[in-house]
Image (cartoon, rainbow, N blue to C red; front, side):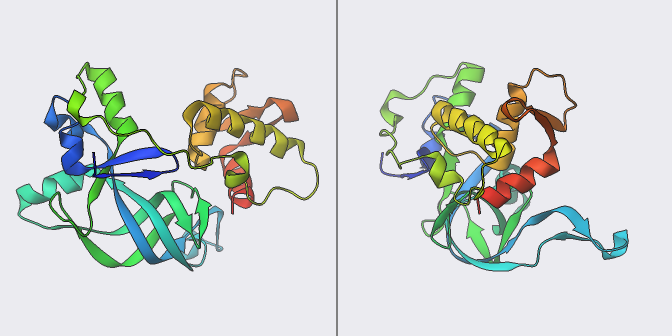
Length: 245
């Protein structure tokens, strides 16, 4: 298979190749997200843990835009992409969330609510060679398992390349002094990496910890057992973003 790329040990197939990966070509339309490889400059809008301003009309929910250089896979909702041809319209994308990739030459996992403005409308369709659309292979495999669809034996991709994934690649700015909270979350992140063979975003790591949390906390709170404390989602996201800058 020649139409595939690997980011962070995840295989992504071009959309036309993905449609032939399963015995049911239309299964790819059941996916919630598709991806585009973006390489270039963009403005980074980081979601603040708390909005600024004295009233709702003046509230600022995002930090001031930061100019960055990206080389990674941008995630976007699949529904408008599939609907565009039926509406007789072109599908273009300008705002993306970076799923995996480099920002200013360093690996990053941004918060799911933050985004990038590329400043240009990029035309996408299944036959566009300049800006191909990609599907995450693991998403296709989940569909196959969920619906009992066979994988086309002639469409199996090559093995993913080991991209030297480690906790040091994720948390590039750990606290200078010892922190029980950091060590506890670092331990959970290591468990996630060992299980999924990829680096987690803050939302993915939160969900992983929450899944294994047996303390009975509310849905917006987790227990950091090794640190002997609880943490709400905003505080967790703030810590993650500070350590993973």
